[in-house]
Amino acid sequence: MKKDWIYVALTSLCEILWLLGFSFATAWWQWVLIVALIVLDFHFLAKACENLPTGTVYAIFAGVGTFGTVLIDLVIFNKPFDLMTSAFMLILVAGIIGLKLSDGKKEEA
Picture 1 (spheres, rainbow, N blue to C red):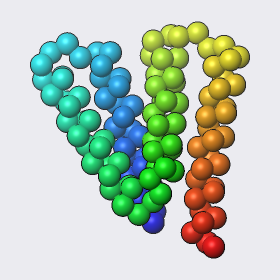
Picture 2 (picture 1 turned 180 degrees about the horizontal axis):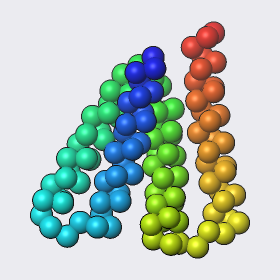
Picture 3 (picture 1 turned 180 degrees about the vertical axis):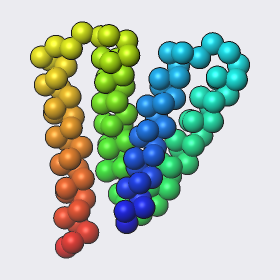
Picture 4 (picture 1 turned 45 degrees about the vertical axis):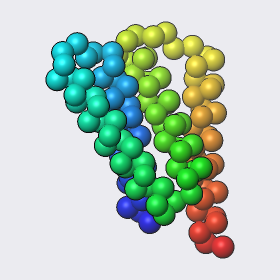
């Protein structure tokens, strides 16, 4: 079961990387790397969905991708950090943690 959560982490990481690549790619080989990351991303997503609930996997994948993208905007692209951004990021993290915890309860039951 832990292997499946590693797939969720890998698919989330791949998503953040290929989204970041959109901001920097200028040469054809960089676009090839982005496409490879997208293919790898969906491979890990499919592997994670084999043994975990698809809704939970997708929600966590999308939430972590969104959170990571916002962090990249803040750190790399110097987007201003305000109270509204931090509040919604906390809500997003709470939702991701809640989904993970609720998934674990179903397994134990």
